[in-house]
Amino acid sequence: MRRIKFTEAEITQLRYESLYHKHALVRRRTQALLLKAEELPHAKIGERLGICPTTLRKYFDTFLNGAETGRVEALKELNYKGKPNRLMEKKDEIIAHLEKEPPATHKEAQARIKELTGIQRSLPQVREFLKKAGFAAER
Picture 1 (tube, helix red, strand yellow):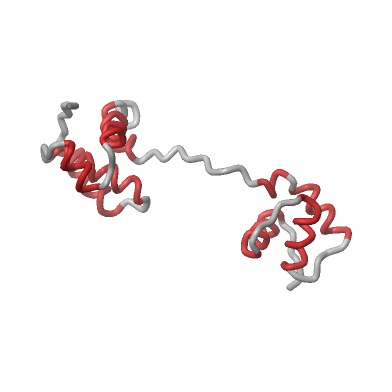
Picture 2 (picture 1 turned 120 degrees about the vertical axis):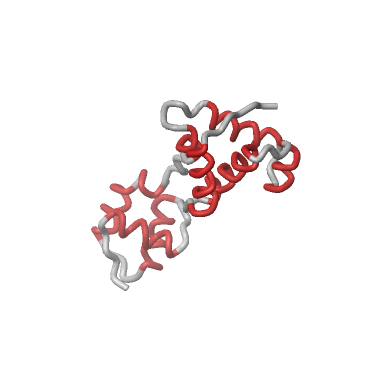
């Protein structure tokens, strides 16, 4: 069992973040540490939050190792980079192709992108890609 001493300021910050942080994962992490501060057994914390003992230990370790940025601040780091956008990787090729013969609709752009690259994306994804790439297809 990990022994953690909490300051009053950390407990106050954990209370706030557990309710108001915009990301659900951060809220769950801070709730786990808040329950730890209330000296709830690890099994009860895991049961209450629906997390396994390994995940709970990772939350505690993140908190304990966060001395540089602040222990509560360490819980707020997400470090998720996302998946690479395959359309953006081929952006220059796609835009050059579409500029030669501009598509009349987003649906046509979707079909031509699939034909050119083999990448199938939904219409909202195609619209977003074209917007980010600075290409305005006619509706």
